[in-house]
Length: 174
Length: 192
Image (tube, helix red, strand yellow):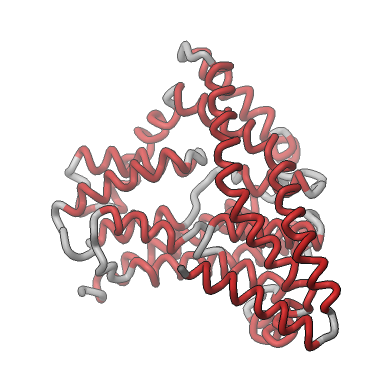
């Protein structure tokens, strides 16, 4: 298992390349083309990152995050959620690039291999930008009566957050 | 617009909080450093992000997504009983889910929209159970290899950026199960 987790990138690349060749695809051309698109994605998210990482840096420097964490920690701790990750949980359903900015700031501050850094990463990896997705899909067909889509999706998000904290404790200890 | 209020709120809180705790200097410094940190983050992400979008392009061109989509269709018919007889809608749904699994977010969205458009022909004014199910499946992040967050971890110097995979899978699976269960329960009681 450890071997697979260490080698997941090389193995995936290798298998995809061999499969692509077997399907007579110009694997290298496709790689280069796709990598160019990746650069465009980065250019698209950079402005949002500048805005949000700045705001989160200021919040942290002002002591506001510590204060909020102290106030809310009794409540969040009862759920098993670290209060330091509150900003991430608040922006996650609203904006993908905001969540990436806030999440990477947390991962950088506490370290990627710390408990908080890992939980932030798992939260980012196991939830989606709920409100954006709902807006895009229902907006495309002009439906505003979304019935239970929002509560059901938010329940899934909350489960993702709770399980992220729990799963990191389970696999790595806290 | 939500982000506009959130962002302005964050800035104002930092100023007020910084002024009241006597940390004006730190806040002012953070405003400058934060913007720089964002650009540094983007640069340190660039290599791995580009590599992965490249690998994903190979997956797309070689038809891996279609193959996965064929495998998923029987399972998905159970989740979408209302539209299971409609070939075109089911094709879009399974293509959407398989694109999500492989991390092809840009390909997944238009496929999902196609499926919703097909569903809207049956229920043009109000969300149908199938639409809610599709949206929940799309908001629950089914990605097998969360590459962006692994890139962030790598950029910050993680020992093994992918060691969180089992935890991510566990959290994802649980959130999808809860989302699906909520849909199935609500579909009986939430009629309008």
